[in-house]
Length: 378
Image (tube, rainbow, N blue to C red; front, top):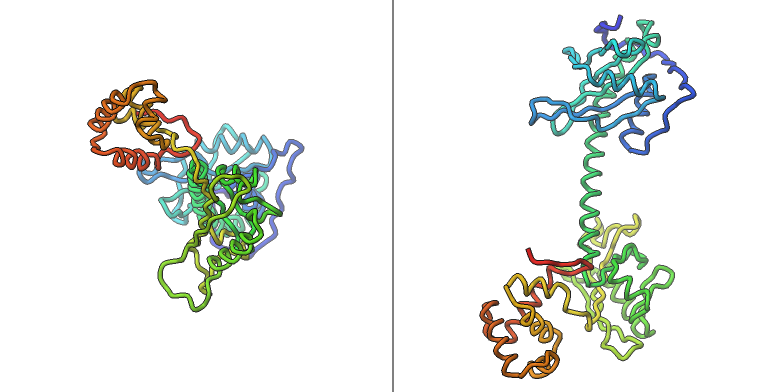
């Protein structure tokens, strides 16, 4: 009976064996839940999806999806996973092993975008005593195998997108520039730590009811109008590069105004406006920058890369912070002539010729060393 190569027959109702008291908890993985649905459709007690690696000449990779009704079925399926599978010309094959005498498995060919694989379904032998049940299972198997392969590709793409999302989020966390993603209704979708530091103390910009709000009322009106202009540009706007708006926001402290830049996300909808407003996606990016932010981040590692000594590194640190050479010498408790000598040595090691060139070089390197990290030269 199990070797039957029957074709499609009239559908019949399959009655699955009721799960035992020791039923295994349902997996939260998307592919596992999908396989659980397939198993319920055909009355299988367990199932797994096994991709093959074409680069390894068909070598089996570990199962990427696994579901079982109970622990006994789980153990039996693991036994059958060790059995070499031979598929018939119809794309399926029965799997038996003495280690699980009360069970048998059905391996179904599963086409995938990158290679192939097979779907392995576990049944109790007494479930397949009637030939009609076998015919029905074989009738459903090819379609279920194709569905499982498609679902596997979806889960792989989702996992890749999730890894990219985590990498992009890490890059935003590293940035010292406050970055806020705003929806079409102006509500905040995401704010990196640098932006949160500004919003938490209401330093020129605060967060009220999940909306960005400048300190001054005049700035509130200008900011909201600028957001609208970027999210939904006027119809008469000239085509070409998307427009970004920059503005200064006054702060209650005596410090310089906060710099705010509003930029589009670059995702346009079918009507030409910014897409994603109804779906809760980002419609604009707001950059917040404090003019007085420290420029010392990673400076020591940059100086080490150029072979500067600790004294030369200290000299460069003072110059980058804005001190003139004479005041730098006073801070270091050395004579101005000695400071000039050190500066000449720094010029030679960094291949620069003027103090302005040195400062530009250090600031350019610092673009790559932003964030809350301990930087060392390598």
